[in-house]
Amino acid sequence: MFGEDHVQKIENIPLSNSTVSRRIKDMSIDIEATINERIKISPFFSIQVDESTDVSDLSIFLVIVRYLNVNELKENFLLCYPLTKRCIGEGIFNASQSYFCENEMDWAKCCSVCTDGGKSMSGCYKGLRGRFKIVATHVTWGHCCIHRQSLAAKPLPDSLKEVS
Image (cartoon, rainbow, N blue to C red; front, side, top):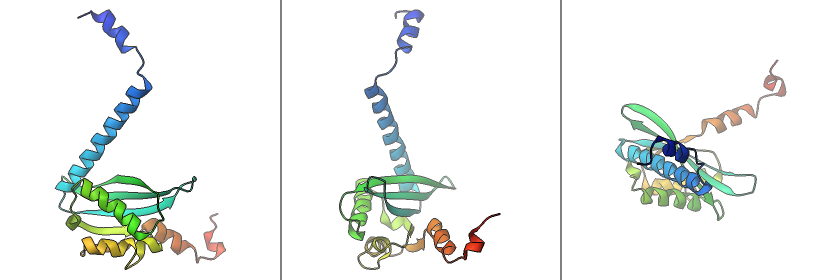
């Protein structure tokens, strides 16, 4: 309407902070929706769950999901929630349960859960494991491979820990 000169001038105008922030938020919402749709379509999925504390002493709940997408196994970061209350199995379960309900994901498709050996995670009654067994009785449990390597390295003598 104004000609090529005006189009070039308009394209050279830097975007405001709010525009960049809004676009980043829109992209992240789109990525999350895409991953959630893929999980719903997949015949099964598994999750790896961890709760850790950052440098500001804030507990963070992390979930990584693996699912089948067009005959290929995919792995994506699913969620990261701050936990404001004490980090007990019930609080961690409630955070995951609310996300799964909000996004209409079916626990029946969850085939395995991987956690560390913490009491809040692995407790058979009050831990996350016990809570998950209520909604998904068929779920198998595994111990996180990163933590397994850490546990396996602990009893080694110092001479075996050195690399030369």
